[in-house]
Image (cartoon, rainbow, N blue to C red; front, side, top):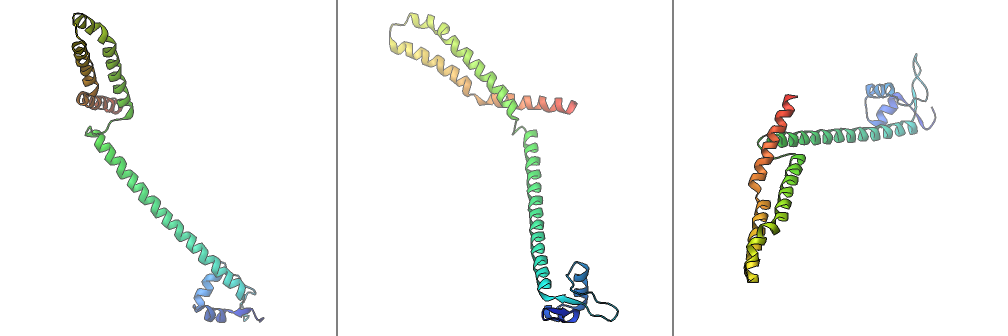
Length: 176
């Protein structure tokens, strides 16, 4: 044997493993300088064996990283599923509505307010025509605009409308 080659028994002793471990490594691809058998001893190039063990260790770390990544992915999936279930439950209780429902109701609400604002001049003109003081005219206008803005800010009917629309949407969806 050369200086850098060792026998199977020497390899086991150098690496402090059993002979069956060396045999297992051979089956898994441990580089062999000369095959043994029928009375001939295996020979291993120690530098090749050390490099193979380093490669195996690195592959083990990479596999461990993959397992950690898989575990992290599974945890994220579980969290996402729990969040979806919670959102579904909140939607069934009427605590959440779809953005399309909100957009539709908001569009209707703003359209109503727009119409009311456009109607202000014709509604208040007859009342302010007889008034002789600016403060009285201002008061009439302020009252009218306050009524329109109150309608815009009333959230109860908006929330009730959103909840009702969500029920209708779910009923249509369930009927399909």
